[in-house]
Image 1: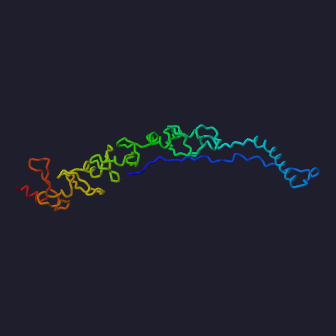
Image 2: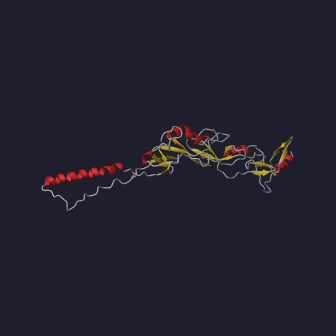
Image 3: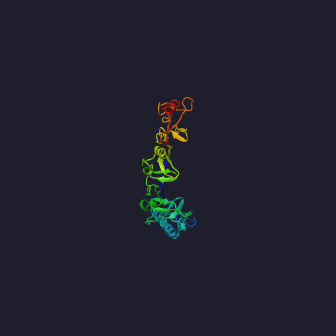
Length: 286
């Protein structure tokens, strides 16, 4: 008897992090001076004006390089659904070991994008086919119904614990004895040749041999007993406590002075009296 709980694995998608799209424009080259034509300032004010003019010239030379440069795009890989290249880190996600466009990784039921969201992946019954993706809400109503086990007794979905027995799933409360209807979760059980489930006492009451004297089933003394004691004599089974002389109560055995000397009842060919030797003689002499 094996009992375990089966859950769908909850997986979390993670957004692809920002990446460096390329280095920026190179810094402006230092200004070059020709020592033969340099004009030396005569005052601090003239020197400041020359520095401001040089900075403006440098900015005018640098502006076309900044606006004209196009960053080189980086390709992260192929989308796990559409197969096209994924090049935008802000429009992609990573899940189940693959990269997807955010617009491709969506709930198969409602179409909601699942980037950064909880999702459920239900394996496809077709070998090699991708799993079906559900958001948490739709999985409870759609995907869960497809993936959940169904109880072999009542036929309803098993939403909590699963009791595995005889190679089949059951609700723990549905796994019951076919005779007394007692719940067998955590208890010993057995089955007959047609697959009916029994608790151990009821199995013995149904299938145990009947005593040739009292006609009651010969069952174990306790539920967890591994052996059943019985006496086999004259092609019949007897409880050890029933295998006694019916006149004097002597316990009958294979010993010479305790052997059984059965006697048919008068007018009853199907009724046998168990007697010791002395009581058998006494009956015959009556």
